[in-house]
Image (cartoon, rainbow, N blue to C red; front, top):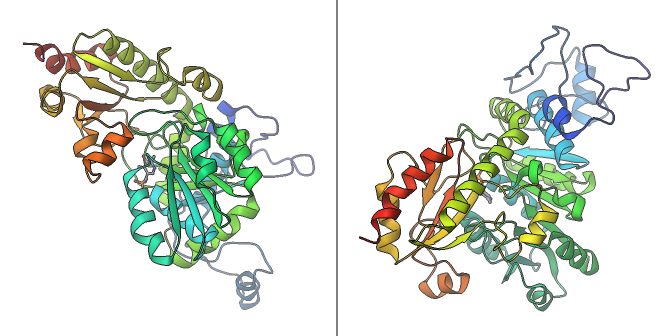
Length: 406
Ligand SMILES: *Cc1c(COP(=O)(O)O)cnc(C)c1O
């Protein structure tokens, strides 16, 4: 960022001591001499040099500056700086998708013979990446109960290098004690990597609780409107340098257009996350009193087992909830099929409300025993509450729910 005391440039904003809401709108913007008010997009694959000597200096790294957009791009940098400011991280590196972020962190910080501990319930493709590809390179993986510190301790080995988790978990909305797991990571000299996709920095900042790296699928709430794929890794510069190395060599970097969409998404992230949380809270409370709902999983309900922890750790409970209907798969499917507005899709983090049956979609690859162990019943439905009117969302869910008893 510019040094305003030395040379105040009215084109740029002075953001020293700025609050979250201000950083969300202004961090990372660098105006060109055109004086554009909005953030410019730089859709360029490469850059030109004033002379052969300048080209040589840029390539050798002697002179700072752009060379090629697989390495750096001004639009991507704006997104990275804005997200880093919001997560309270030293730096950020953007990726082509959330999975590219997880892949790059693993490639950068693990090697053959290492061991990784992962919470049992993580995004499906994360599981596939670990099981199908990391194992191929002789990296061992143990799965543990997100809520049980003893299981993390029991899984630890001399070659454990990395701890990976999501909180709240999907689809059961279990809330991990991030400070306690961070302390365990410090004691064991391992890296704690937190996928902060469900909460975003608007609701939860894992780095401030001691996590080493934060992962994002920007595809979800950061875009928030289902337009683009992207991801990011945030943390200390020293931990990001090898991640940048992987991205530059392997290539899953973010496109300038998508970076621009995410940059604009960050400007409304806080108000959207508050609105998603408000709507989800109302839907959760309504479901709780419905006679054909037997259980509601939402961290904003006092009945949630980690309610107190979630109140401390998150500024709101977020947009995703799950619930069990009276009956089994047939009844759960009836509720889905009776909807006329809500989108039937496993996606989440969108202005449009979505509904899915985890046991036969996102968690369909698990065996019945694995699903039972994870507590994902056939009667469970997951709803990512969007920004439609709560009355309309409830009416749509009621169509199937009301009919179940008949
Ligand atoms: C969607 C998702 C990912 C993967 O992100 P993509 O952008 O789809 O690659 C990772 N983690 C969580 C929690 C997700 O929901």
